[in-house]
Amino acid sequence: MSLRYERLARASDRELEEHLRGGRPPDAPSVAGYEWRGYNTAPFTAVLGIRKFIKGFFAGPGGLEGYNIPVKQNGLNGPWLHRPHPEHPRRFGFYRVARVQADAKDSLYLNAVLLDYGASPRNFRLAPERVLRDYLVQPFQDDPDLLLGKAYVALGPCRVASNFFVLGRLAATDWSP
Image 1 (cartoon, rainbow, N blue to C red):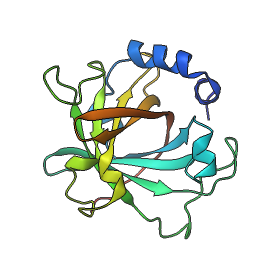
Image 2: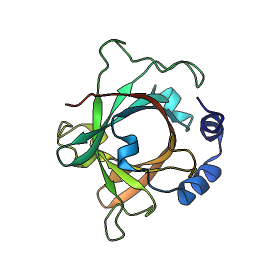
Image 3: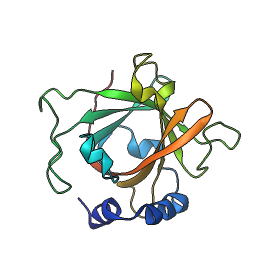
């Protein structure tokens, strides 16, 4: 884990917002085929047992897609270990990745890509994660291995900010559904 990763994981929401607004969209080829160590910065995510996670990206038939994997909650400096079975990670919370468009409903950060959980047919129709919308940027131009995101909850036409998260490149993967 890089020093920049740790700094972002411990940064204030104000600092993270500045990095998010100043970032650029990650290149699809640079994220596809990789899993990323994820860390939600908001303290409430620790209470929910979702502070740490793994996020993966793959090339789907309609473009870039992704998923989440639950991991052991063992602190920022502990290893990212699949839970409950390390040899059989459970993939869930699927999303489609799209460039943010100025005229779209989800256009809060035009310099980002949107991870749209509601657009993925891989999620059960009533799955709670379908309301999630994540904006994702590369906050440092010289570091494609570090990404910053902000999660929102879509409630009809309203978007309610939830939390920031940091992603660091973890490992290559050839997984696809």
